[in-house]
Length: 264
Image (cartoon, rainbow, N blue to C red):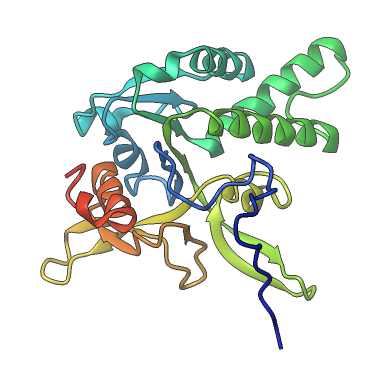
């Protein structure tokens, strides 16, 4: 039978000051990935964030403009741009914004590999810019992982977008299952990057039952139909016509019911 050890009355705690009780911090920053097929509305959803800075690694912000987003953008054409943006944000630039958007991981990763190959061919002309080897892929994967860890550490709300891909996932027992996940190049990269954030949500267009010719976006963190999703807040579930303010409101309602309407 298990017993509980009790400290004698009047004896002070000997625990080091680094050990603290579980509690909600003063500032809780949302960090999420939203993924889906091109054209389902990932960019307008992410750009609905108030006072946002978009790190544009895609070059496709027309939908955000059409949705009348008030966000500002920083174009990422290569790893030099990514480093410059991070250094600016780290030095205090994050204080000028409420949200940081990376749109999208998938296409920026392709740009990153292009830069690596261009630099390589400049040093080794016998190499072909369109034939990367395992080393170049690995370098690009490691750069992406570090960049995402770096921006994740910034004290600012964040949403990253990605395309969707059917990926083979090895299970602990050695079996392999296929799931739809964020499209991130490299073995195990999608699972690893999903571990960097609190929310991973799939976005899709769903036909209206009343009007089959009309579609509307639905955000889901539920693991069903072979999709991967997670929600550490347990707040989102299935959300039709999602926006960042609606997501924030749902999370705040879960963390503190008195703030159920915040962000709407």
